[in-house]
Length: 403
Image (tube, rainbow, N blue to C red; front, side, top):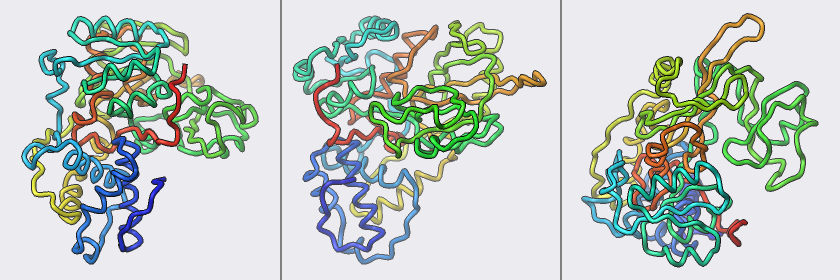
């Protein structure tokens, strides 16, 4: 919730959405509350306040508004360059596309993936820094910095260094047709999960606040712990058996690399390339996510809320199973469900996650790095189609960098 009130005599519905825009400028684009408020108030005109207001009622609209306002008022770009559109050429795999002095910042917690990505970044000419001390952030100020590590460790880094973290929407999995899931899944709260009287697979959509596991009933779920509240979002899924599971690193609607990671729930990494199921995995992915729209529209003359709303409505006309509901860089886990009774098999989505905190298993680390750089890089490089997928970092949660 945005901590300040806007000084606008706006209709209730418009006022609510303008406060969401201010919240996004504060929590996703890392502006101080006073700065966010002044930008929103200066952009809204008398015509906007007195025109009939027809809202689209979607998650994306305030996020698009906030992204455009950030680029125009903070990043200082002009009508013909602001903001980036469609595919971000600035984050292409070509090392020359990265600005001089770019750096990869990684969390202090050592993992095999951190090591592999640090080595890949060094080969690409990026300086690699480990976040062992908050003072390290001061040495990186003013540079294009990319992140790999957990969300808690990222809290201070992303705000101070203006890093944008992309991740799928919490509800994306629940919006997929049943043919892509093979099971019933609902987005709910931990309080609802506590009342379960049957076995279910329960996990947070993105956080690690409770173990992702099959619970015999709701009484087996934790009730206390790090950041756990009755309102904690959880995905509640029907229990199924996955015969084999794969992790796909996705960039601009294409699999750039992948890995098998489990067979009947046991860790068993192997590269996707050459795997007996590679063709089936790629065919399932192609059916799930049609090719993204290539968008080269130049955003011009956004001088009022009315013009921005019209432009946003056009941009949101994409297929909501395509780029309209998923960021340009993310990790997708898929698997082959097998019935224990009949042996019948069906390909299904396991989950979608942020790339900037995903284990690469046996995937190509150089190609994994391509996806990480897009998913956790400078705010000013975030493309229009990714505005809605910036992770909000609420100022009230800021504090010492977790060890």
